Length: 224
Image (cartoon, rainbow, N blue to C red; front, top):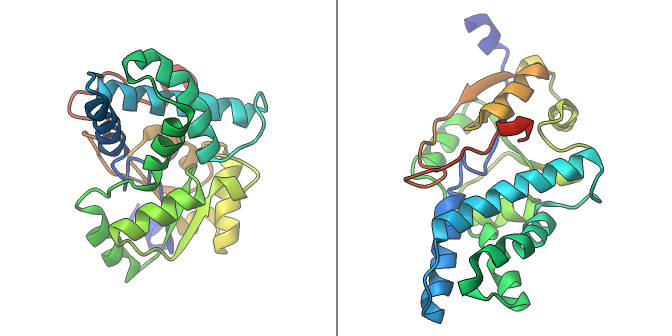
């Protein structure tokens, strides 16, 4: 293992959940809407349901069952399905558009930025994500995080966890799989990266889905 790690030049980071706390951001935004309307809503359940449906829909994009779109398009499309489950909010189309923008304002976990900056002193540290380029840019700027490179699957021919997504990302970075390590909080991501030949590093984020998670997105039912 030590010999294997000596080859690593590039760290490719997942960011949604690994670096950015999406659940808190979405829950708080939904809670604010509910408060402004004087209604009650299970905001954490809304956030979790939206995220689950995002990955279900991404799987359809990957399979060709839906036309190709980036994460912003998927978030807006799936919000039309999630919102009716929480009818007390009675979201208008404009409110849905505004709520979709919350994904561009994701806060970072407190330990993320310090760790990333230390790692950049030794490695090339890049993002490899299914999230849109805009989401990563906007959220990173708000959190003060600098990256050596940002690769969104929206610019590749494949979305993670397709093995070719990892290989295409590494080709852009000019390294072989043995020279790269995938860093993520999700087993599905690390499993696929390992199949592509990358080393892997698991970052536990037990509160990614809130303090009382009901389900884990990932390889449940075989979908990421």
